[in-house]
Image 1 (spheres, rainbow, N blue to C red):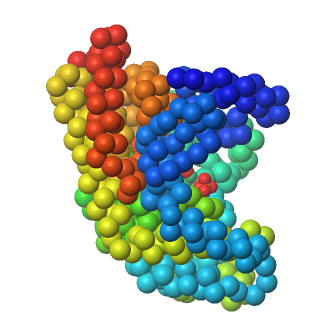
Image 2: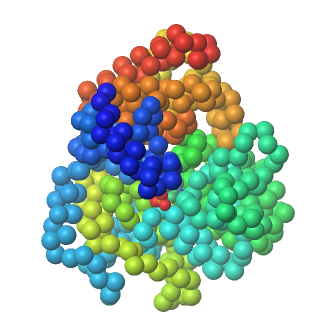
Image 3: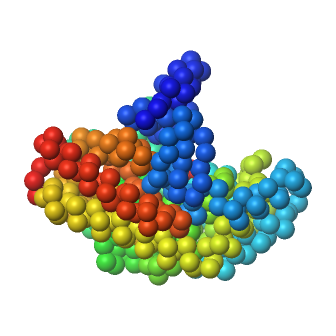
Length: 437
Ligand SMILES: Cc1ncc(COP(=O)(O)O)c(C=O)c1O
């Protein structure tokens, strides 16, 4: 692969930004790549190398890069407006109506700029509504960059029990109000409710844990249990559907699991890559927001007309239902193909997937919660990703980060992925980097 222009840009970037990268999660390996163009399921870098994209910008691109309907709507919008920050917009009403129509829990809707922004508002609403100070999140759950959720995202395995702050600079006092428990552990959650009686404003959870841990499904009845225990204790259930929403189903993962939370936050897939997020939920809870109630959510760039145009066009395509069939079928074929290679080569690994998202865990051990990830051969998992990238599969070198499939991944893209994974797994085996099953 050519990398001269990418390398030149990286050298320049190092002079103007820490580590030569503008978001520390975006590092590519074996070399830093500068991307320039995307079309459907494919991407190109500044040196002209082509990739099949299984990263999809961490998930937003459900319809693939530069979907014609979405880009047409965006182009039309930039011809007629930038921003207003006054009154309301027709597209705001239209998108909010669509969300209220499709999402079981969405009686009322507000927009936000990013997933982090939306989560921040949802927590504030929950605290304002319940007049309580504490929230519960699950160990291994990432919910954006606010201090109050930067707790126990990726604590070192085997370290003393938490809570552990994710990074320097996070206010230590958040551990007094953010409580963490293992996912899929009903007893632990019951204990926390008992020990903090009348103090918990909300339980915050992804319906399927994807963000920092790959793909951990809720055990049978676990989401129903979350619904019950929050209701019984006067707390709210907040679903973080930043990844799952509009990707797994147009009604969110909540429509698949048939569990209705009090509040939900959506972002990524809603506008196929344009920046917008949504906080929605029960009418009486959402009415805590100003001007009806007294909880604040403001923002200059909230509900940007270009993002709304993209969201409206994305929803119109998703509403046909076809993208879900296409994404799921392509993803399941990839998962089946990789699983077959793992079996054939006798490697200690397994594929964990849910619809269009999957991850390869380099262990046979079942992954039910964060601590189970300690069984994973992280070195092999990272090398697997790096080797895929050097063979033209776009993915980041993060060992347990999920991969995504879009509605426009073709049969050829699926075959390329299966064949490349087979070749890479064979290589890992030959280098004795993976244990035998
Ligand atoms: C589950 C989840 N919640 C919240 C966020 C934060 O969203 P954003 O990056 O748009 O701030 C992310 C981002 O990856 C996420 O995966």
